[in-house]
Image (tube, rainbow, N blue to C red; front, side, top):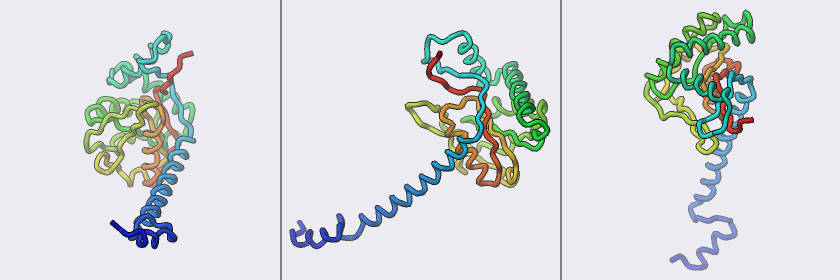
Length: 225
């Protein structure tokens, strides 16, 4: 056991450890905090952009909702399940919004979807949808320029469990040159916290894109009025 005199040698210097680990750890912690602060500011910047949704989506655990909420659930679920009729309906809604919002600019905008958690889901849910939206509105189809390399954990954004999509190089392959200096609009079926949208937006802007904002079929609500 160290003598009292030896321990006293370090007290005036404010050290917990003789080897200076306290200072090293403090410095590393400061760098980590600075990095996290920069990331958070980037996410806030993306979330401050225009984010539009078509319907209010109430999770099943929200009971005593009206017929409108029930119909909205059916719309969202049908789209997620790649129901062809519902997909066409949502594609027409989306194309109409794009034309009204951007006019002639739309032909210079790249339309991309936040990838689903599996390759099969992504193909079924978004390939045909993107083709229809781009055909109807004249927007540029960016579907093939974001490619899933591996299935990822399903993203469930809610108040209790904060998860987000994985856009690492091990999971997703981006056509970086394609997105450079392009105006991009990001689409997803449901937005809750917006973290997945913001992280994808940051990734695309890292490649030189200009993300205009987000467009969503539904936005999650927890209180039905």
